[in-house]
Amino acid sequence: MAIALRTQLREQVRSDIYALTVLPELEGDILPIHRLNPDVPTSHLVYHLSFGEPQITSLLESRRQTISMIFHNLTPHTYFEEHSARFATGLLWGEHELDRLREKWDLVVADSAFNAKFLEDRGYRDVKVLPLGVKVDRLAKRKGHLQLEQDLRNRFPNGYLVVIAQQLPHKRIELAISALSLLRHTYRRELGLVVVGPERIPSYSSALKVFAERLRVEDQLHFTGEIDDDSLASVLRMSRCLLLTSDHEGLGIPPLEAMSLLVPVIARDVGAVRETLRDGALVLPRDSGPCEFASAVDYLLQHSEVQQRLLANGLARINSFRDEDRSTDVVKLLLEATL
Image (tube, rainbow, N blue to C red; front, side, top):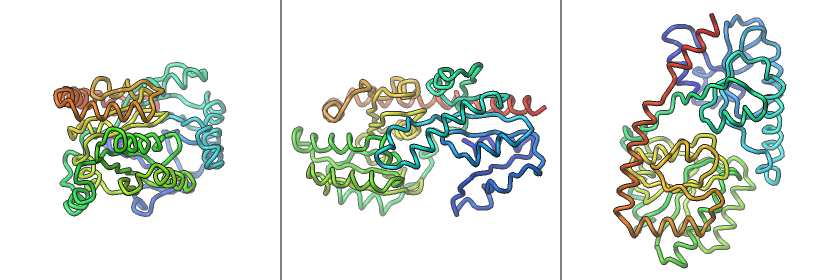
């Protein structure tokens, strides 16, 4: 989203992105935060908030020019207390930062109504809800990875389900593993499960593998780690269904990308999920567990007409979501704030 916004801003003004941590492959394109010191002349700052860092808070407080904030959600810190005190502390600091800098922003934008309500509950007013820069059908243009596709066919001859998420506690990947166990041992569905996403907290990732062994599905479970877009397109296209088991979603991009590739989606009604997916996915009650997911998968596999209706709704939602991209509106607001 930051890169999409920068692209549009550069059509009219100079615009750069600064970050506290820059991946090696983005060095030169994304600038390190230390380059943004008080002596660097900038007319306007746009801060993308989804985590708290005292260093960034101090930097923002030191700036004299106007600052806009784009809010991408804060996951509740309680999900991380068991596995990572640093993550939990950072999320808590993010909430503190929201309160501490409330009067600093001249413009506040949230990328979903769910995220806007979070801010309003903390005393914010006049929050703009403007999804921006989400390329929901970007994977449709990818050629795919032929060798990976062949490997997946060999490994899962009867097909597989897919979860696309960072391996973090609030993503509740263990629910998908439990659903896989039920599908195999109760429903007699010879399916596999592919989990795509980087390991962020080693203790949680290790616990997932131990859990799979306890449920006797470790051989039907494949963790890909982080993969490129061609590989992601292949994994998604070949999957029977995408599961969104998360407890907390501020927007949710992977299910939209799955819908664009005609892959059915089953999700829980948490956060902004229903707002984002509408009738393009099979949305289960928010407290649904492995039994509901397994039953829903089995139902979809038995009823092709339901699948087709879901896929048609998904494509319609993708088309409407594309039309809702409000990057131009955000650029206009930012330029007005700068002037």
